[in-house]
Image 1 (tube, rainbow, N blue to C red):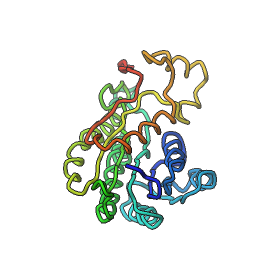
Image 2: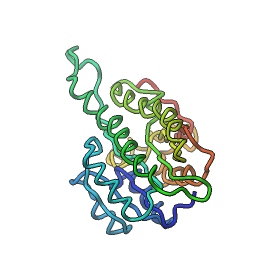
Image 3: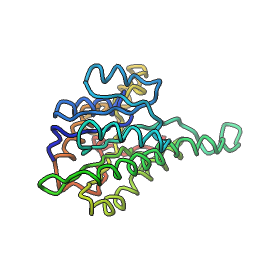
Length: 253
């Protein structure tokens, strides 16, 4: 699908994978709307790329409805990419052997899984009302899971559960939205060069990269963005979760 002249919405678009994706979509001629928290660098990003910044919490239906409406007002909404998420580690039991607070587990699942679903639902309702392209396409939704959905490490029960949920709902949602000409795919990145990892000492970054079979390095945000563009362009990609990980399989710790 050619998105030139269409609208694209990217959550978590102020940094990392989301920022790279927003930039790549802008270069294709899409009108980009970045959705991120008010405290983010979203305003600075749209100043660089063009487009619109909408401060919003992906778990808030009203705020997401407003963001989707803003994106749809720019041009026909065709592309939605969900990159918003959090990843604080927490084991089931703390150092004293006591359960970690349930609220910590609930918050992570709410942001990563419930937030992703909220964006899909609100965006799909808007895309379904747009006119189809000559090929019958209305839009593409790309979600972000993680290799932790399959190879969760110690300290990642909540993160792995949330990303596993994103993977698991991809196929049923793709099947449901097929009637509207909307495709749904998910990318499961491995160890990526995100702001969180770039804050680690270089030796730590090199050590993480060396765990990747090939290429033995951290994945780049532009590689994630490139895969998003391929999913958008390739009309036969639907209902699939694609690992983007250099063939890594995460060790227990």
